[in-house]
Image (cartoon, rainbow, N blue to C red; front, side):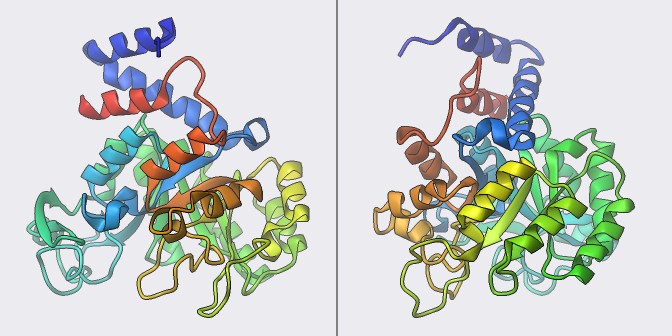
Length: 351
């Protein structure tokens, strides 16, 4: 396929000194426009790489929550990565899912009692193969710096609500607060009030996303109340799967036609999760219609396609590359104007 003159120009710019940064800025600006203007992009499904994209291919390629996984997700063309944040003993924010080091690193024991220097002695492990890599536990500063101008970052806070301002301060100091999305589970007025109080301390420009699960919330009216109190660009909606439940036929109460109408009125994205949870049935957060159905069963239309047809314009997955390829091939992704965003990301990550 012939490259347009804009794509050729972008490729040339990327090869110039400082060109990768220029391409990155172009990339993240386009992603932000789609994230912040949901109604303009209802025919495009954005992809979020779970744990930075380190769980792809049966956890055999990269360590989770690593800079290597981040670079791969940028190259895939994902619009966002999700990461988990904890603190070291000397107060440094680090990117790590578990409270223990045993599963994902060469070290043993808890994260919290170790200083950053001690954590940096731990090499990250590719869980599916057990191979120790040259990657080390990244700090939040290091991770966000690598993502700056290239991709959005969704922070899953493993600490208390009072830690959010510190995380936002890191992003603000790097000049990338708009690239960061923080989130919290909301299911009643008390939780809503707490989130509102917290956001008063973080300053302007922060993207906050409520997480709404159908075990506690089944009324779209509550979601509309949340949106009115805390205007958000996306709502993470969870359709829990029971162990013996068949595949959901509708997406549950949160993926209703009324919810889709509410999303349009509020100009926000419906976010679905297809990633796997250890020791839980496949599609545990997606009514059975998770990544396993798309990949192991080779039925992507019944997973990623199903959620796209029910209004999801953001999907968080363990398989960002595969999801992007299938969605693009089946008309669920719109090429980015003026450039091939996957190419821009891949070139920027190499430089």
